[in-house]
Image (cartoon, rainbow, N blue to C red):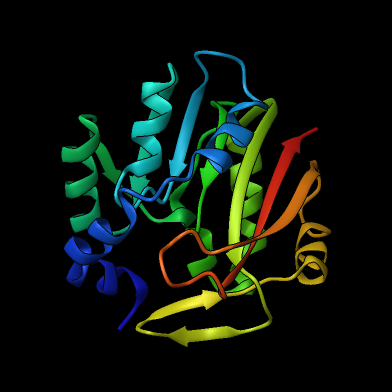
Length: 194
């Protein structure tokens, strides 16, 4: 089963388990880098939780997800159209003030991450900002029906060396925000286009 199939088959339970998580600390940290009324790409929007938050805080949002079922649910939840699209299909230039990739591009293999990061950089306006998060660790492969690339500070440094024109602004490790999963750690990153 690939990751998109997983989300198509488990869209209801996944949306229910993530949509109401209080994630405002991360969302607000990302928004602090952006001017008011920014255009944000929610890059792998899942349930639409973050899209809705950004809309409610006065920003414009374009939301995409690879899963048709997640797009349907996120569109209903946020009230905006959500486009079905793969990460590799991003093909715009200087469009977004910010790209939010919260636990999304971690489903790409490590070897494909640099190319997608380059597309993300190209899609940003000069000075634009990316937030991305990865499960913390060294595992790469299928886990619980989905493909994951976990990263540490060192493996992210190796990755970002392949992407010219992005500067690491902040990185920090947090515990999983979902109930009962505090032992799971996440690497959080904020990058800017230079």
